[in-house]
Image 1 (cartoon, helix red, strand yellow):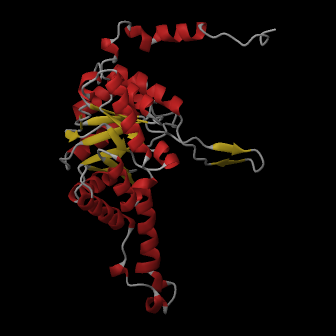
Image 2 (cartoon, rainbow, N blue to C red):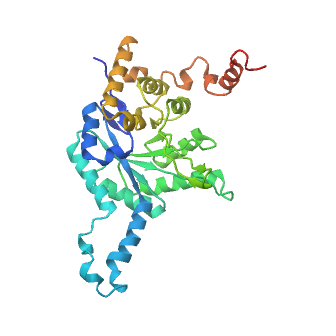
Image 3 (cartoon, rainbow, N blue to C red):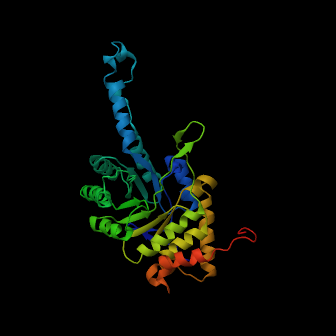
Length: 337
């Protein structure tokens, strides 16, 4: 019997497959389907502080002070004492998920203010989250703010949050840091239990008809897993943090490669949105078949075996691979004429 168990943020999981934050986690029924398919833990959809702030402003205007605009408003506006906001609904969803599921439930938080990260993080812990993922989405577009200041913002919010929460905290990072290994060491020193690589920054597009910027959602592709493989293989050689790979996993091939590189868990989202929760069971079975063919007895046996420090040629992850790949291109006959 192959042992698929792995450690994630100090939690012992039955296997490395963990659905990441997505619309699937908004429904208890979908969460139960993911658990039935073999999910070892789940990350809930993100709680966005911006939405809470906007809701608070609207509530204050229409429910608390609506009568200022119309003397008769108090007669037909709902009793605000019974109003359940987005925060209450999220916390209730978290509690119900914890009570219905037999696997760890990780809350996901996307804040915008220092107090928001801290206060909401405390609320999520009190509601029973097994761990907390900080979904930090910051586009460093200010030319007056240097890279050190950007990193300091991440470290500061983590430091403040660790003062009020005891549950493990994982930072979901983008790939856009000048020295990712150095930054991850700073997060480790500040109290992070793990990092998730990488957050996908959705890119705006230009509508050529209206000449306006438009938002578009594109699911991840298998090729995106390559960036995760490189950096997890590098980081596994330099940190003891939990490493979670997120992005580009559609089948057992990407999952096994990421585990070989050193990932502790593999997150799934796009493939589940496209193929349904049952796709997780197929990936899990294919992983077991591949491991059996390779005579692996456990995930622990193979995990990190191809991280940078274990490679015969460590330069395969840095400059030498760049040179080899560029020189390997051969055009189709007749193209270069």
